Amino acid sequence: MANAKQHDLTLISNGLNAETQNYARGKDAVVISVSDILDESMLLNLKGLGINKIMTRSKDTAHIDLVKAGDLNIQIANAPFEDQSPKGLAEQTVRNLNLWGLEKCVGKACCCLNDCAKKIK
Image 1: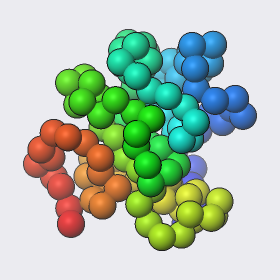
Image 2: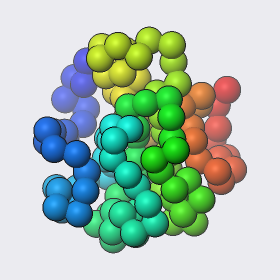
Image 3: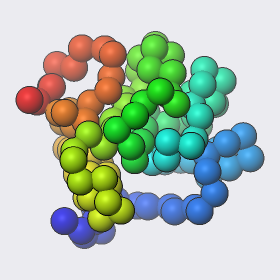
């Protein structure tokens, strides 16, 4: 499952924080790690930069304020599948980006607190 040039990706090695958030400007989504803390302030900043989708490369979402994300209509996805290897996480990330690109829900990876009219099982 390769990107196959379906997405315009900008990869940075630093975590997402106040100093790096401007790299998200003009993007639809950001992909974060469990060490990136997305509190209310960071979510407001990301929304202001145009971010509407956030994918965390982890099962855990405790580092994301899901209530505030819902209030801002930011879709959140995680990596819920058993394969948590780097390859498995990359495949889950591309899968979620592909589904979002088709304007579909990411199914089991969906962490949105809002109801999704397009939710898949």
